[in-house]
Image: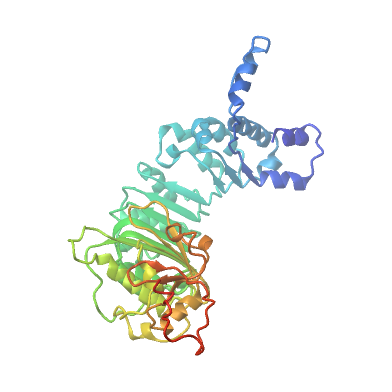
Length: 465
């Protein structure tokens, strides 16, 4: 950046295209320090050097100084900057430099800000005032606990009318105030709400004759007073049906048993996440399977809220039986990525057919199961990493079309299997032995098996070993 700045401002021969390429999106990144940095730093502090050479410098801070000077000296370059990415420690330490920088960037849309900015910390007041006064085209903003006053100003001053993404966390505001803010942001397309227990279904109903605008992304986390009824009321609008692409529901009043209603009311959703703790098993009713032609990514993270007594199946097992029945019914043809908190789900999907969970008669219909491979990520609640299992459409089709007790458990090579199933001894087909294990594939027996063979000699069954 130092060399480019010298080229731009000393030689004055830098092209307009090169300037736009550099300053349209600026990233002041951190630098990797090699192992010799300690030795080099010690050599810089020798007495033969000028005293200033031994003082350590932070490269990201130096880059921010250079960039700030560049845009403040050239208004044409400052007007081209729309995105400014800054490392965490740099934006936490250099708040004054960051305030001077954003004050000359009128077309700025996104900037990395210190944490204190989002909760109205006094140390970020100057930066907040400069951003509110100079940058009227900000597209993304966050309001955390303590920033209730700044949040209310969104409806009163209309300082950022072009906001597209809004994140709210632990705010203590009245639902009516939140309704006024949402009604004033006509360009809003992404809302993330976290830990707002006061928020209820009024968020989705008519609020001062202005309902919540159609969203492309809606994330609800730790909002227990929002129920299925309110969400379905919001999804009843035709514009919302067409716009909504991503839906997240974690620890809300929306029950996992109502997910089929939500998917039916949101035909354009491609990414859905539901994370809930359950205390009761899914009712054994004639509930329709989960059905969606657009859904490609599903996070189905159902876990047990309480420990179950020994000998009793956990309540979450019934939900994963319902999920497997929906997949095998072919009602999720576009599903390509599935995340589940169940280590037994791969075995259920690839095991021989069993009496299906009572979801619907359509679960047993013979029709195409999937049009693409399914990447199944599973883990237990206590595990940190996901285990990957690849499932092909032909495997699921065989799963439905045969009741043989020796169906192959997987037809993939070891590099395609999850770490739990990798084994150098299995290179082709994994076959269940009926006790949760696998049998070794037999080698080709060179002995003749025709009528010419001796009848008195009993052949050893290669499969039984």
